[in-house]
Amino acid sequence: MPEWLKEGKVALITGGSSGIGFALARALLQRNMDVILLARRRQLLNKAKEELNEGERVTVISADVSSVDSLMNAAKLITKSHSSIDLLVNCAGIVKPSLLKDLSFEEINNHIQINLIGVINVVKIFQEYIPRGGAILNVSSGIVFFGIAGYTAYNASKTGIMGFFDPLRRELLSRGITVHVVCPWDVDTPQYRKEQEEMPEWMKGSIRPKPMNVDIAVKRIIKGLIRNRYLIRPNFMTKFSSFMQRHLPPVWRFIIDKAVPKP
Image 1 (cartoon, rainbow, N blue to C red):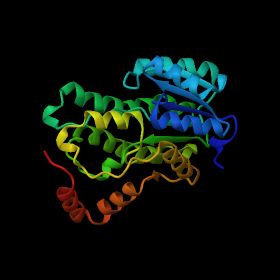
Image 2 (cartoon, one colour):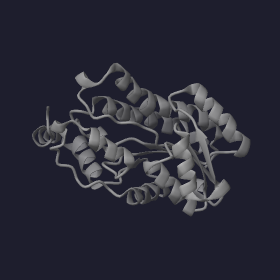
Image 3 (cartoon, rainbow, N blue to C red):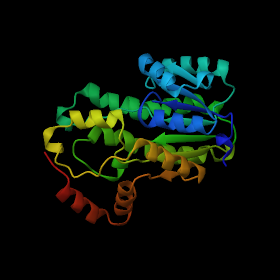
């Protein structure tokens, strides 16, 4: 068992008020870890704390990952009650499926600021509180192995995560902190359902596998963490697409061009 998973250890989860972050919090509580949920909306955080029903073992902090000042204030609050963060999880993120020409500059900027810059902000500020034996888990996306029209800004932000964490992994080797990136394909979360509702009509003809149950996804993520996997691919679709992109990129582009809807 890794050091960070032992009883009484602490996990800080951004985007922990819903979706994968919330399900991961629930699973870690069942393994006797304490959790800190960090998200923007106080109402959702309070609801999450109530649903988890674990009293003082759950701390909720309202903060915006794209704001350095907001995160610095959150760090001050967290360090008053917790001496260390044993597992840092970056789950906060947004997605708006749309053609680049139809995205506003603000929407493009929000993808980069929240999905990428926000992650970098969180790691820079909180890494000093992670002791030897700790870990950092970062949620990217299975879409980084595709080139799907309608996800330009989102794909750029999630691919940026991959580029950031490989060198970070090497930076933290001497400190005994492990770094992990999970690339899930579709997982049944509130964000996934909202994405489907907002998707342009031309994208809805895409042949996509049924979304994975969030608890199954979390179970596989934790399994990957325990096995010290750097790249965690919880879905078959992610495993297949990453293999194709690495070993047969021309064939994979041809398949995507033929099978995936285009505007």
